[in-house]
Image 1: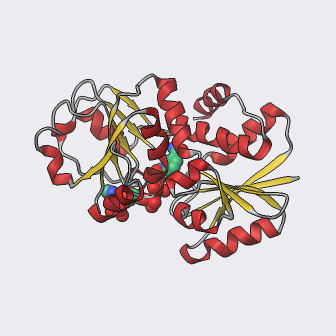
Image 2: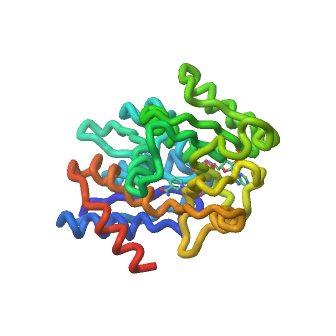
Length: 275
Ligand SMILES: NC(=O)c1ccc[n+]([C@@H]2O[C@H](COP(=O)([O-])OP(=O)(O)OC[C@H]3O[C@@H](n4cnc5c(N)ncnc54)[C@H](OP(=O)(O)O)[C@@H]3O)[C@@H](O)[C@H]2O)c1
């Protein structure tokens, strides 16, 4: 049977295996999709062994997306421009192809939710693998992005990666409360930190919140995430967690592996019923 896997740490919360099972059933493909939890220094060995032992494709999650980029022999344009990989595929000549479907998946979900336009001004919280992976499709779509991160240097490293693009900049958290970034400067706030995963609330000034803003957390859970609960408590009406993105990015991974796009809307309805 065709074997696929998710590599990461932690991975317990992930619903990727359920989503890929639903896609495979929908299309009529027999495949197995397993979760592989790896320790920090054993990712490269584990993924290479997985492909040597017959694995056909993998998804990569926190915290291995930058390391995955380094391992690939070939990259799609999306992966090359973002500098991080969340999907791998073994090719017929045994070379590993890397893709990044996080950004296109998020953009698709934001379009489904009808909260993004090509003029959206986005405050992006976080500078890890997920934050870096979503930037390229959003700026290509036309959006402007400001990155704010707990460790300012990590945000500056991402700016350095996208150095030729004028639609992206970074700020220190304390400058967010100053003119012009407070009040109505941003249309969308995206939490791409792993704070919600740890049950933490990210520390941003309430002055960036306004009643028309849309707040999105890449993390997902059966209830509202800590970030989304905080947003609601500050008067935000329009929110979403990252379950839609998870399904959309999984669909683009599925497409890379099988050359056929599943119907994501049906799977989203199914996943919501399971919850
Ligand atoms: N829905 C989806 O499809 C999808 C896809 C990808 C990722 N995700 C989610 O996105 C999140 C980030 O993943 P990742 O791969 O980017 O992880 P990562 O590479 O480990 O990066 C973690 C980021 O979160 C910040 N951070 C961690 N704890 C924090 C806290 N308590 N307060 C403030 N900032 C904190 C880190 O800041 P420093 O730089 O200061 O360490 C860094 O910017 C995870 O929750 C993951 O589940 C969801």
